[in-house]
Figure 1: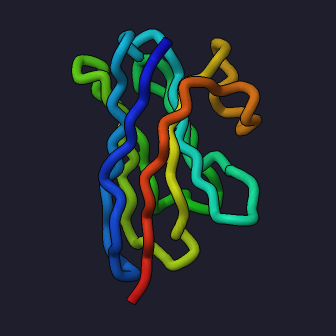
Figure 2 (figure 1 turned 30 degrees about the vertical axis):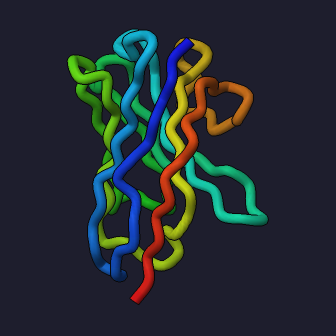
Length: 126
């Protein structure tokens, strides 16, 4: 079991930047694909980014492409989501999760992920 804790959220003005961190405890995440999701009340949880075990391949959703990047530091058991040019539509609770199965972390299907963190709130507002 991997325990994931997200941090780095907060209030930011449109056009601003944030870096979210997902720190793992209990077991190294170096063997696992990881993903970032976000959720707005009343809407489905949607994938925004994913990264393979060694950080060589990454996925970013079309809605945030060019503004969000994902990377990882396995030595620190941490996955990052770098967000720039934030828009009000980016307001959501952001979650990280571990992919259950090899090669499926791009799927966006909630059942393909496990060890969900508690989330960190990102609010983009002027």
